[in-house]
Length: 577
Image (cartoon, rainbow, N blue to C red; front, side, top):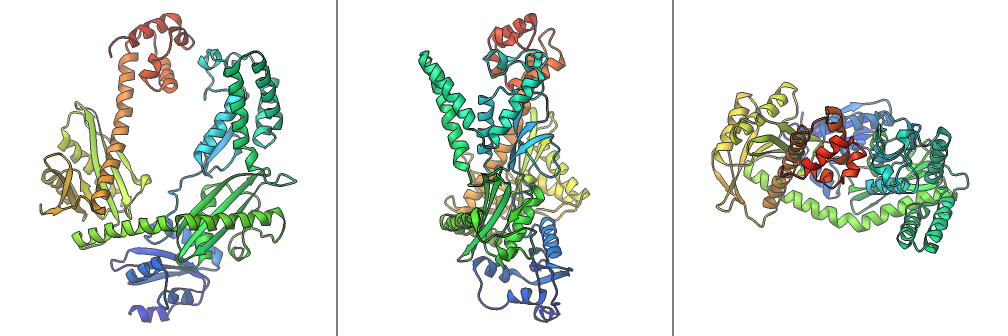
């Protein structure tokens, strides 16, 4: 049955459809109230840029009938996660948004966390913040203003925070339970938006410091007041009853779509979520799918407001007047502005990615969508590590990156062999998706290693190596038949491959440094008499590096260690290590 005949047999019922390319690979998943009308519409009339590209690659399709459009929405989301289709919205890799947590402990402890529906945190939570820097800045502000507990786990002895005046000494019970509750209540009121009392108190302290000619301290109080005004006062919403709710709206223009979510907590506009992409299919489909995905990962407010056209398949409310309606309009305005500012950026990016895709297709005579590149790192054969980065549709897919701790007795070639075998044995064993292209950072020798491993496992993966010139700069690709493929150094393909090499090198080096630092810690701290494993781990968690330990005075070390151990460590740190 040809495609035209198959289109005529589609049912006029709700469900999901899966478009496939010439290799049978799913390249787009969509949902419809009427499958017959929706799928046939792709093959009639003119379309925008991305839909035209999609249709040009469709060679077949499947469909699944559902009971309702809402059921189709859920199925569509699951199918997108299963097949990772090239032309669907690129979601945010299941990355949850940051929140601020007031921990459910006796002492007031405030931190930034990543929260999703599988997370188990006890305490009061504020968020989500789509900007992690905003969350951290607000958390830092709370920890500067209020006498919070600074250590993640309560210490046995007074630490540096106490001696610097940043902690009232919770570890020694210098603060009773009633005062701890008072501090926590003040923090909660502050984060709920009742910050005027805090500002008033800071102004008193600033004026007093100024009168006592303590100008540095007065400046610190002034900076805190300014930080409060920037972080909190500009986020007020004219809400009389201090409600918490979410608002979503969108805008389309010239084949693009922008989506905006606004999150109001206790009457304040706390944060927002913004997205822009090409419009593929019905805008309501794209928006509903995006919002459904968002709430799969992040907590949903009790009340959510949408434009009325989304209510047929999303559970929520709409309004036509009042401040909530103004927020709906504000979300619309944000979407319009996002389109104005970023349409050209997307177009330029897609032109860049299209040129790379076309070049790969020309070289290998097939579509290249998923690429894996490997590298290793060591210092004199010690702490040998390997790294693999994955690019999908020419963009980094960080959830698919992998690290390998390798045999230290092996040379570079043996390390590459071990890494490739471990990676692709698991691909075979667990039936994981195969990449379209495997890249090794080297020419004939590295290619032979990759061919041996891939061949021994019976996998069909295209292999290519990156060759270097006399200056050790990448200058060509070499295929499995050892044919040299010249790369123009001003081409998009050259910059793309250089970017991949930089990324895998960075990923490997970061892991290597982490292991090397642990080794240095171990070598220095193991020589200190009386410094047991528990104390060593405590120092490692708290100070992170030898440089940080070296910066401490003897008196500061004595706040975390007994006098004799502190003195021995102080002297050891000043030797050449």
